[in-house]
Length: 110
Length: 110
DNA sequence: CACCATGTTGCACATTTTGGCAACATTGCA
DNA sequence: TGCAATGTTGCCAAAATGTGCAACATGGTG
Image (cartoon, rainbow over all chains, first blue to last red; front, top):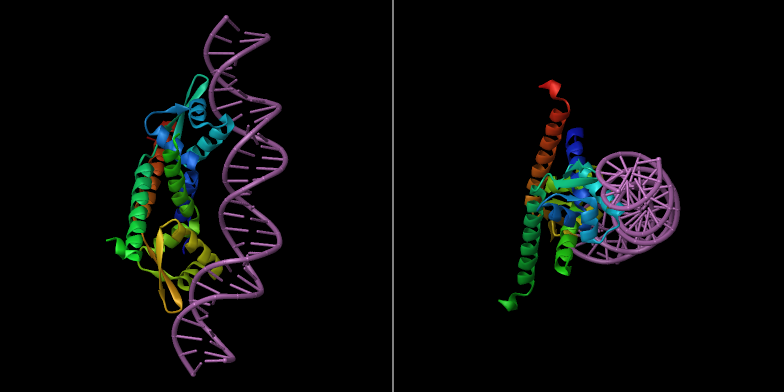
């Protein structure tokens, strides 16, 4: 409960908050392949450009993506690919545990 | 942009949303050592018991923790420890990248 | 049974987040 | 210079979230 622990939890919660939206997860997965500019992402995902820009700004504030200006457009690229691996790990663990509980609840299916 | 991809992103965003609060992150880190009941956690973290219960309910709905009734109290235990490793990985990557950018911006410090 | 400890739920209120629209800034080009 | 393309920001309304308090449910004990 010391201040240092609280700071760490706030920082990590901030990272997770940036990931806590389906469209932002989808954006990161899209950026995994190659950098995209805002209008490309907005078009591919069916978003208003302002909405896409705001989502990307949140990801950037969390340090998950970075930008590079190229003339009149802004390229976003993924910084921390490990968060996507983590998402896959968590999803796998949670689904496996959910299945395990169902097997216990319904043993007749064995 | 197919439905299957969208479902996956929604599921993962749901996991991250459950993690997107400092107190819930702290709860998971606390549960890493051993199972705790609600009143113990509430007391240790300085929370109303109702608040602690609601946070834990969110973690349980996301599949990150599980419960076991022991008489009049309810024990919560961690299901997916990998999310804590993910948090550490992401934090490390982000902080390293942040430092790298500062070094580029301020090369005189080398 | 009454009583207490533990958890959960309902409600009200404040805060935060989200999406859409318009306005503005910046860059490239004719 | 004017104009078009790209991004960002400001504002607002709707939706979601967080917190505290009270009420309720459940299980153990005298």
